[in-house]
Length: 163
Image 1 (spheres, rainbow, N blue to C red):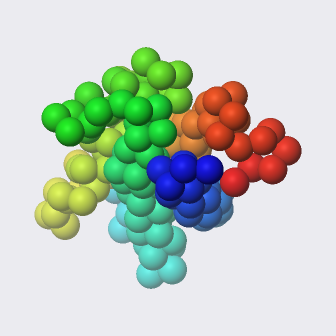
Image 2 (image 1 turned 135 degrees about the vertical axis):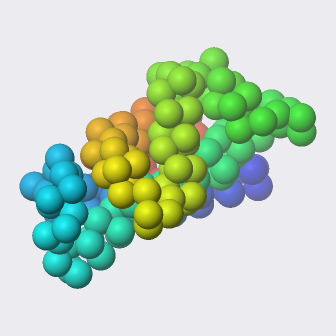
């Protein structure tokens, strides 16, 4: 097994653990959505921390997929990424069949970026973004499953073993 493949599989295993935590946070917080200004004002500290954990896990999963898994797949597939933007890498993953839609993944990445640049005084924008996180988290979980199916189809792992 090549060094590139070993690194890819290690990154997939690490991302898989984050995906499990994301799914846990999503299920734990689902009843609080959709979020309204009144609901935000009534959140307990524990509920707010729980939503913050959901956002953090979502952001981590998107970043891991984009920065580590996409790069690893490209290396194993012998694709040159030296002059590729994140958008180009995402398009390449769609072309290779690792993900279904570069545009949809781009939307997930944009939301992740917006979470990392939110400011407390932007309450209405924050609520809008919070309400998007449920569907986008579901999308990221499904995309990880697509990536797992891709690496299995490619023979990088056996269908019974996972990573």
